[in-house]
Length: 266
Image 1 (tube, rainbow, N blue to C red):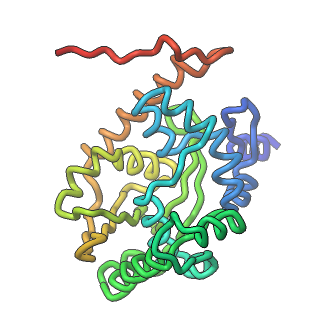
Image 2 (image 1 turned 45 degrees about the vertical axis):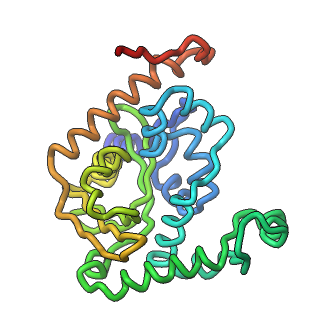
């Protein structure tokens, strides 16, 4: 009986609403994007919300309350991911044959269907996916692995959610698009990919994190070795800092950010 109770407790996780949930049930529901980006976005942290907290508590507050428009880079990255990892999802998208998103035809399609893409965006994503498919080392990185696999766990005492692009036995691999593959090693820190590397190794309980990167211009492909301990530690430090920002500004009865300021020293 004690073992049964212990197993039940280990399979429970406390989310930000203060309630306990069954992990298995959450993971099943997290396969649905509406639940993952809706309910779980509200009641669990992610690498994305940590990045917002690192930028500013006001940025985090505004995005969580009002949402944010998807940038072109995010649109391009999402389509490439879908084309490689979820081709059936890619093919189910609405693509509009227009020269500009400012046309009435595009705006009408957006009103009717919500998220829509241009044929140029489709063609660009397919060209990148084709370059990926033709690269045997890149294909080996995802062969036989789980893709778009959800995870939920406590990290530094707080609930976190994630979806692994590629989950192998001993590593998580993330697919990235970039406009400058030769500068990726530097931009990885600026875009806080170290945060993602740390969180995903913790959430999925694997020792290694790797990247497959494709240049949107040249279509060159970069494949990383398992990232360094220093890279993971950088992500760990950033998460600790961001959670401290959250505790200072949002674990209160009322959120008050009017007096928040950034000290500038010249």
